[in-house]
Length: 287
Image (cartoon, rainbow, N blue to C red; front, side, top):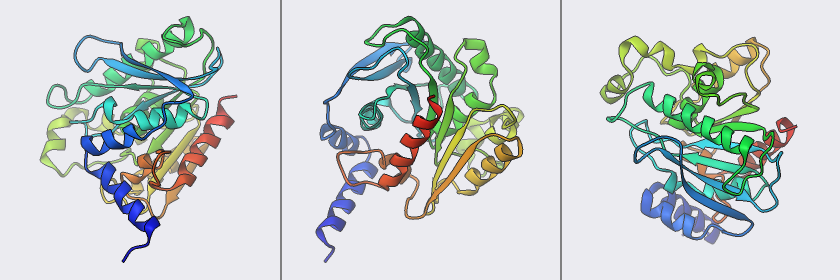
C-alpha cells in the first residue's frame, strides 16, 4: 500500500489531470490571502478578450508584472483554470496577468499569437497608467507560458513584430514551461489544420531566437511525452549561439503537466524546486 505522502501526491495529480473540475478543487484550496484579484479586464472584443489580474498587497510602481499564457494545444484552455498560478506568483510579490485568447477552430495561427500581443500591450498600458489596483510606473514585464502558451509567449519574446505593432514591449525576460519551440514537421492532422502550410516556419520560436533577445528560463520534464524535451534543448542552443542568457532546466521526475502544477502552493504537486528556480530568475532579471 502506498505511503500517506505518496497517496497525497497521487490524489493531487489526479486533481490536476481530471480537468476543470479538478482545477476548481485545486483553486478552492488555494489561499486568497495577501493579494487582490481583478477579473475580466477587457483587452479586445469577444468572449475570450479579457484577462484576470492578481495584485499582491503592497505592490508599487516598480513591482514586476508576469503575463502567464496557459496551454491547451491551441484549441482549448481557460484563465479560470489557473488562479493557482496567479496566487503562486502574487504570493512571491509579483503582479500576474492571465489572459484568455481565441483558439482553434475560431482562429488558426497566427491568430492566438496576435491575441497574446494585444493582451500584453493592454497589461503594459495598465502598468504605465495605473488602474485596477496597479500603481502607475515602470513595471518590468515578463512573459511566461506553459505548453502551447509557451510557444505563444516565446514568439512574442523572440519575433518582436507583434509586440512592436501593439506597443507591448520591451520584455524583461521569458519563462517557458514544457514549450514546443521547434516542432516541425507536423504529424497530427489537427495541428496541420491549426498551422497553415505557408506559415509553419513562422510558427517556430527557434527560428527567431537571436542576439539581443531577453534573458530566458526554460524548464521541461524528463518524463514529458507530450512535448519532447529536445524542443527546450534546440531553443537553448540557438539562444546561446546568439549570446542570450539562458537557463536550461530538466526536471527528471516531471511529466508535461508537472511543470505547471509545480506552482501550486496548496497541494504537494510536481517539483517545488522548479518554482524556487523561476522565482530566483525573476528576482535576478527584475533589476
